[in-house]
Image (cartoon, rainbow, N blue to C red; front, side):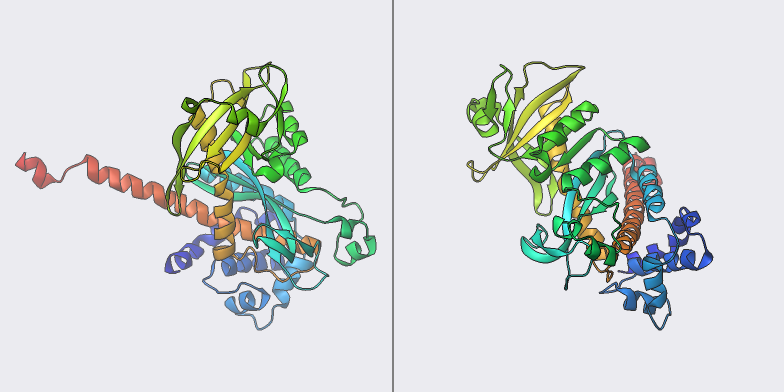
Length: 390
């Protein structure tokens, strides 16, 4: 916590990057206080505790910042994305889509209903946010967000208006959100090489075709009974295609470090599609548990024909980076600590929490580079006493 506190001292310079998007000084100053509160070592980061953190007796100013003040949360999002690229950007980065739940009470918060939350692992009264993360060798951060509004809301426009959801806001699936966020990233020209997501997104063929039309390489998880066009031109289930492969096709590889050490699995890939065009190929990728060979996960892949098995494995394993983003953004930056009901207020809190998380990501990346540099310096240059002894 002391480290996080010390990092909060530099937040004013970070805030200055997007201060121009706040039309007046009052919301501009409130936003700086809000960021400082999100970075503070508080157990709960709601309107009351954040107001107390900056010496306010009541949360009125905080609530006004989120609900009524004039400022452009989407412009802040765009500046946040640019900051992430500046600090951890890499041409081989991976864009990751996923959603997470925010448990709520009552029925009035925008988009809330009883729905399945992967966060809780069950059906709960919650809101669902869809996110896009950016993962590079030096760090990972959330760069975009959308609030899922179920049909129970979009079919009741009076209810929507009461929660600040305009009539122009249509029903959109989480896959729609995924494509919107990817399109914004593509339009912004951010550097990345691959896209990945879990089977809720990967099993949707329209999303895969959408990416292929734009020449965007992907490794997308899919369901066991998904069907693909084989290299011979027929159609096959992915599990049947993988089951027909000889034993020597499987290679034991690490998917990277996890909380309990290296994520070691057996991996195999099978070329699919009889016609490869413009230097891109298609594969089904399978990940098999070392401990339980019956436990197999499947992916559909599209990428440069030069892609190696270990390249596809790296991208598939990168999906966990967004889970780590959710965990740290909620645990350290109050991503899920908000108390707002209005649609726009949700976007405003989430954007500022994402900004706080991106700031910590950048600081950690800088410190990691400095640490590596110091370690290299110590290794490369022996002390004067040792040189003279030699």
